[in-house]
Length: 184
Ligand code: HEM
Image (cartoon, rainbow, N blue to C red):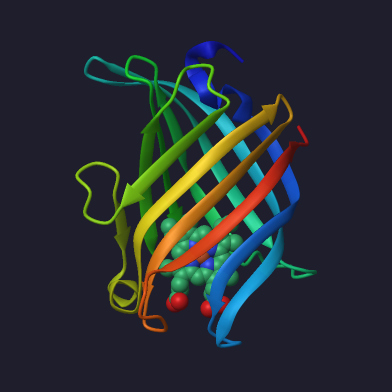
């Protein structure tokens, strides 16, 4: 794919990864749990999208994660990844169907094979929105993801979602990581 997509170019396609690992507080088990997961993701290129003099290229994506033999995914995301070649800005805006929107950003070289995006609650640009229940009981205060492109057909992510939860006096790091392999 052409360089209009900068460091996101490799991500276009369909992906699968069986080695996911989630760390979260489980309400049903009343403890912090490590959960292995299978992930499937699709990234479709689009662009340009012009805002005045700004020109963005992006990927629209949806991903789903399953544990064990369950039919219904226990986590899904829909959203966009965006690249602004003029400024080197990389963005990921997505929705988690718990009622959370995240707009994370960072900068990278056009040929970067590793980059980090972050968002925090109340930030002017890279911020997080959530429903009123979550704001009271399990509020997402920050989000950070590091992407590593290992080659044309493999990439990995490590992400930390920092939560303020009723169950813990300190901020709780809810983490996820996986390595995805190209299936199409
Ligand atoms: C691969 C990615 C992710 C997976 C597999 C995942 C999975 C989970 C799981 C299993 C729980 C525990 C639910 C329970 O048993 O009670 C949880 C909780 C939660 N997750 Fe995630 N999560 C992911 C990413 C995210 C992201 C990116 C955000 C926010 C931007 C997020 C926000 C939350 C919140 C706020 C809770 C707490 C809900 C509560 O305690 O009531 N998660 N997640």
